[in-house]
Amino acid sequence: MRHTMYISIFLAVLSICLVLPVIICSGVKELKYNDKAKQPIYYDETGVAHKIRRYFCSDNLGNIRAYVSGSIILFSFIIPCFCIMFFYGRIVLRLRKQQRTMLQSRIPIRRITIYTMLVTFFHIGCLIPFWVPQVYVSVTTIKGAQQMTSLLRYIKISHLFPYISASINWVFYAQMNSQFKKGLVLVTERMIRKRTKSLQQNGNGRDKDTWDGIGLELLSQDDVIAMCPNCEAQLTFRNSNGKKTSLIPPLSPYAI
Image (cartoon, rainbow, N blue to C red; front, side):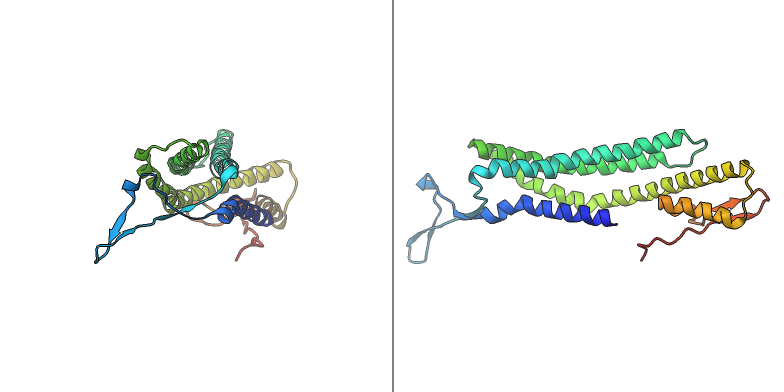
């Protein structure tokens, strides 16, 4: 919990630092027309002509535009895409490896893989159409090149993609997290049963309280609530004498 808070504070400070130059330097400028024939003119009721002045927002970054644009693209696009693909890929590979070591495993590895790929590719698929035009505009502005007018409409439409990702991607995240929960519960259940069976085969006489202590210790180490992924019933063991031993996991200190 403390690490999560530190990471959130660090990311918030980093985000503020990235946009701070734009906030400080931005301002409003008047649009200048090189060709006077294109200057819009308004005629009032008396027939007097008035020039229409148009204003637009400008970042006014000047010489630091390349550094600001490069840092925003790096921290907001390249690094997040790499982290998403790297960590989700490692999670899926770890679960597949764990599945191969278990006989008759019930881990929903296929559904976990599908939802993980949906989350990854949908998020990246919404980021790329947004950031590619931003990179194009930044490069042409820095080099002083003329931008293609045919792409201006697409550049404006591309601003919708981050909102599409934020409004739909949470559905895939919810499904993926539910499948991850089932997989972690099954892995923990298998580990506890394997440890219990190993201790029983060693011939060490353990009473009911001792077995409960072992199970609770393992559960507290993994910080995973052991329950059936289908009916959410508490985890139940069988001792060598045929009696059932129910292990009720300890409450998390962060539970509300």
